[in-house]
Image (cartoon, rainbow, N blue to C red; front, side, top):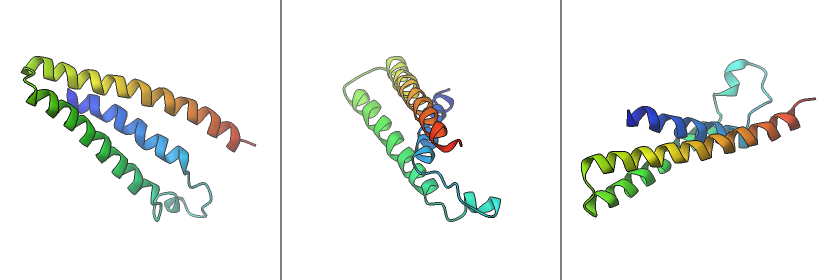
Length: 102
C-alpha cells in the first residue's frame, strides 16, 4: 500500500518537472521524449524525494517508533506531500496551459 501511496507524489513531481520545461517544438512524435533531458531530471528529483522520505522514516525508526506508528508516519508523509504536490501541479498547469494556448 505504501508503494501505491509513494507513486502519487512521485508522479506529480515528474509532471511538475515536465511543466517547468516542456518540449513543445518537434517534427516527429518521438522527439518529444528522445533527447529530452527533463525526463532524467524528473527521475533524479524522484530519487531525491524518496531518499528524503526514507531518511525521515529511518530517523523515526532509530528514535524507537514502533512498526504500526512508523507505517502510519510514512503514509502521512506520502499523503501530505502528495496533496501539496498535486495542488502545486494543478496550479502550475493552469498557468502554463493558459500561456501556451493561442
